[in-house]
Every structure is written in C-alpha cells, then in structure tokens.
Image (cartoon, rainbow, N blue to C red; front, side, top):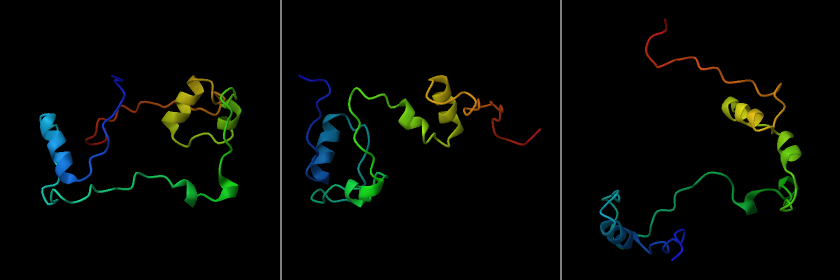
Length: 110
C-alpha cells in the first residue's frame, strides 16, 4: 500500500466522527454539528485560479527551467525568508539582511 495514499474525504460529519473514533479520537468535531451535516468548507487563503485576471497569471515553468532569476524579480518582504533566500543563493546577499536575534523573551524592556 502506498504510504502517501489518503482515504477519500468523509461524506458528512458523522462519517468524520466514525473515522476519528477508529483513530482513537486524536481530535474532536464541533459538537453543534449533526452527523448528517456536510463537512464545513473553510476558506484556505489565496485565490481560486478563475478569480485571477488572465494578464496577471504566471506562465507555467518548464521542469528544466531555472527559476532563480524569476524568483529574484520579486523577493519576499519577510526578513526571515529574505535571509534564508540569501543563504540559499536565491537573493543577492546585499539585499538579504541577516535577521538579528533580539533575545526578546517577552516581559518588560530592560
């Protein structure tokens, strides 16, 4: 059996509860939901492809294409990610400021 294979999505809340019971109840389902209720479909962020304007969609990359130049055109704003990109050679080290550990563990300032 493929260790990455997953079971099909449960049809409803009751089926999810039965599967969780088989697994020893690793988590619980909202008790306000009835067994016959459909599973909630919460937004997961991002945009659906059909909601992205055609002119702003990225072109598909070829498997052999080097994406470093493409990625470097829009480096991340997150300083931790910029630092990591610099370490990996995806960003010019001059543009990837190292993240400084402030040692802040919460509490009052010194």
